[in-house]
Image 1 (cartoon, one colour):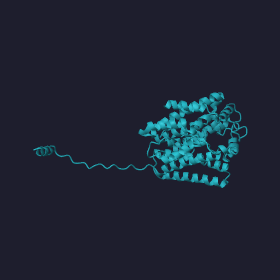
Image 2 (image 1 turned 90 degrees about the horizontal axis):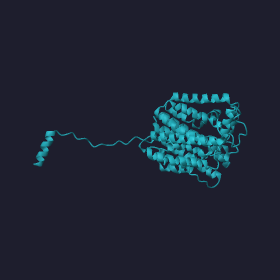
Image 3 (image 1 turned 135 degrees about the vertical axis):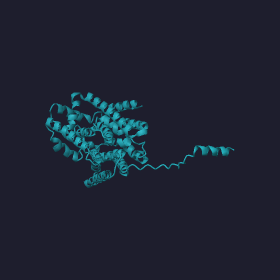
Image 4 (image 1 turned 90 degrees about the vertical axis):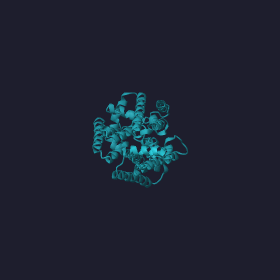
Length: 381
């Protein structure tokens, strides 16, 4: 079943109408990087412009050695394998004796849910980042030395997982934090030396992203994007983003004051990443894939994913239903992402409930062998 679902993922991605939509600007940027040409040339408000940092162009540069069609198929295969392997390792580490149903549920979610289908179909690198997120939690829980380096590479590729640095701080793994920062800075430094227009990422790309990518508002499902589409006052977006940031800060303080276990940190990390997405200036509907680590644990009664009232929010972001206007569809997606964020965050806040003590019957002292034998003989007589 798992192999068939992996094949299904590949087929659904290849048959999509907009196959490679997100990959084309990344591939062009990688090719320009290899030939020392400007990587941020052209009009920033077009959908063919790459918004990855210079270090992202460095890490994706091998794609520039291939034609676009070959690069798209290679990236698709790499992302599917990375997601499958990372999910398997994560489930075996955190699902315990429920690993089999969790694996089946994870395979179905990977192959059939809207966020993953479009992530693979568009050629977004988010599939690699979700795989890195799953591997990060395993490395964090087991104290692996490569955890910080892995996080650093993911930040250099695309800084979506920056809230996971907080998880390392909450775990008091400061050496891993330093490693992540060093790896990300090192890759960025190499890219800046090679790319001739690296400074334009700060002067051209970041200011445009901070405004919510004007001209592409209909693709933006973040709080800022929704207020722009609805024509609401900008103060509403500020208030909503501050509320999410305040809730995230409160969760971090709560985790710092007590001793969170591995499951708490998985859910807290997922909630923080989702908070960063909805409170950012730009997010699309398939960014809901970053809620995947917490949702895989649906068989664990301690997890948020075991609660039935979470799953309407999951269906809101996972089922590819389009009804009404674009604003209605985007509102549904944002509500689903916020609902997942709140439920998972509250569960992490409450923590793992203590196990109920099992009362054992009082033990009777063993009777002496001769006395018990004599009693039984007397009773028999």
